[in-house]
Length: 210
Image 1: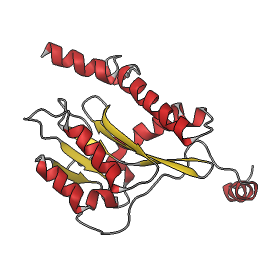
Image 2 (image 1 turned 45 degrees about the horizontal axis):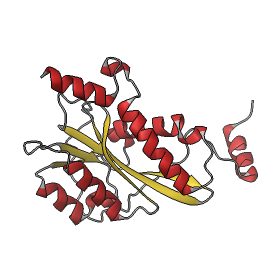
Image 3 (image 1 turned 90 degrees about the vertical axis):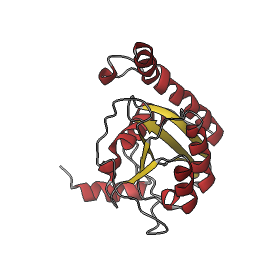
């Protein structure tokens, strides 16, 4: 039996890093804008499509080169409604994602959009984009990742099932692989809570039944 601090020290000396739960990307820079209340309040279920959305940004690192993924998930079926990938965590990454997601809304759709308190989501331009679509903004409490557990769960699944199981020689190779995995996640990967269907299959079946 060895104390965990000894293991940590030896790993640091040998340059080893865990592949299971590496340190997550954090975009918090303090109060750089407006922090919205936690309207979602960990109510991660939705009765229909486009009622509750969640978003966040995660970072991938390949030999010092970084790639950032910014998705929006619909809590109704766990479907990734829109996403953008960039080599830098700039605001345009989030802006393009929002524009892609808005294009999928019907005129009557007004989803709640929940995030953490990262600077992108406090930015006046982000708030203006949401206001332009009459969307309600919600934010996790400071430093409380459980308030956005659904998005964190997706990132964990993506990295456990794909990123940590493959070797990537280039950032471009990783980006192409992320596109393929998200398509698989939406269209083919079944979930027990969706009655053994994929997110897209579940949404399609529910809409045809209605």
